[in-house]
Image (cartoon, rainbow, N blue to C red; front, side):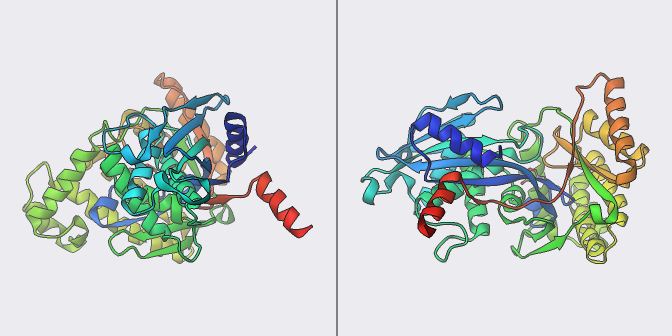
Length: 415
Ligand code: GAF
């Protein structure tokens, strides 16, 4: 059963009525371009087939009532909150993610707390959430949740994604970022929300975060007898608790000292002189960001030229830069990358915020099992919890899901 059906079924069980609709959004991996998003730089993510689905229907009392469904099917309802009373700090723990989205949308005039019309003056919404994006794995489960909630709330308000009067996907991504930064309190950039909303099946998304310009770059690894293996290290990962904000502030300070708007503005050729003008603790951060942006551009050029097998060294250089300059790797990530490379992977790197989470390895399909075995063996040797391994193929971005009820309505309309 896919996540949309799970959410719809659980909604019916929980509320005794069918949802008005189900919306879902995927997790992501970032092929390359890490910690460049909040430096106005370049990123190259693709959407995973793993999704978070939100079944939703309006209420009449101005409350937002959210229930998540665990892997074993158990419903975990959060205490309902009055949408009109939402403000940063008013909701904590996982319910802060969906509540923050309702807060951010309300600030833009999309007020789920005051739906009005046929369903009564007060509004509000019931949401039931099911998903299979591994949590805490650096695969963007929280952003998938937020994006799916944003689409569900906008859908209930009559603004169906991609319809004439609906806000654009990139606009929704910025509102989700606002919710994450200012309600949840995690100072993240735009990578994950944009990936979840704007990625398309079969492609990596080349995004210039500063201009918002993007290009869907075809990425069919299987056609090249290659595969991207995701290695979820299961080492716990938390952006809010980590040194993520510290790194971000370091980059902003470095840009200020160099007299540029963002580190994106430092050209690779000017790097040596720029580094000479920065204090010792900031220079490696700047070096990572500037070289990583260049690696994204090179990767895109190679992909456009049909040379996927040649991007491996760029992936590995990205990992080394994140490990040695940005200093956000950890033993589990390094062991996974080293083991994959020694087994013959063309390239490997950590992905996401760092300090745990997942790595990816690009390898020929012929040696994929060797890579899996090598990573597992290296983990066993060090008594690490064994990683979760899966091959990732670019999947579709966020959208409304068709449910059994939708199909029934279509059928009735055609009968
Ligand atoms: C996390 C953040 F949410 C993103 O904005 C991005 O900075 C990423 O870490 C690192 O590239 O996923």
